[in-house]
Length: 414
Ligand code: DSN
Image (cartoon, rainbow, N blue to C red; front, top):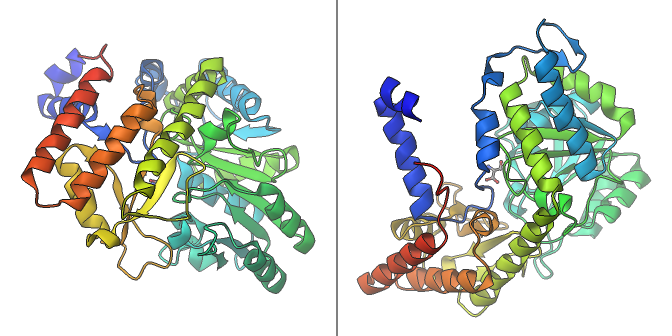
């Protein structure tokens, strides 16, 4: 980055400081990961200079022959990776991908049945603060407190009562496996379309370590930067019958010129995810999450949804006399990054909820396995159980330093 350093030293210092933060901390926000150097190179390439409204072979600009190659590679690899009939790789991120699907398959006033945000759903699944909630009628299902699982009796009853046009599954803070076939069966019974938002678990689905909704659902959206380990971005997979309306909804309906540098980086990430070693990576993500769970299960922390079947855990920190914000700050102070998060039916406000959410994709990319995750979980429990204990804080910092030294991040970057 010698050019950035001389052109804009102030910005260069911020980027360098962020590299330093990522290297010397334990990144446990479950939606974050570390993209490969090849992905970063594609992102920083001259493809950022090109306008290319339209799709490969049908653009509104000249000179698109090279970005056509990049975008077609991304499309073909996405279809191969997920076994999808159609892929649109232009959505700028997960929220735009979801909004594009709504605009493709719904009319204003239509009803959507999706998960309550507090039970692991996402803002774009109809939270009242979003513009989408003004356009469409969102009805929300929840999980069952006793089992930690989606309450399919409630989903069925709400679907029968409200006759939604679309049933939405797939979450950002739910730690259990998803029974796609029961959603499909309920949707078929009421004549609804099915949409899965697999932003969090896409890498696990691609690797085959979690069940895929792609064979049965009408539409599947995802981000590309979480478990898929690609660049920050989004993607829509669908049955061929929905291809036209989805492509039209993304462009010209909702977005302008695609970010071809980003799309090229997605193509690289998909190639990496198609490699056999990605399956080992995804399997290790799950093993590491279980290693965390085993330690937390022996602590006073509450495990929401009873257990984890994926890459994340949602923990209730109130039994320790903490709030989510305080827990996040305590862990931040020792170099462990998590995010405060609402727990199901939380009575606290979103800016200082009752829980924290943490996961294993980024540390698994760094090479940490079960033994290291067990050590980290014990450190987390100690820090949260002894908030004012300087010796505990010192020990935690020491653990973080030892682990980050033992598993270097981006050693090639200076
Ligand atoms: N912000 C993402 C997450 O952290 O899960 C979801 O959009």
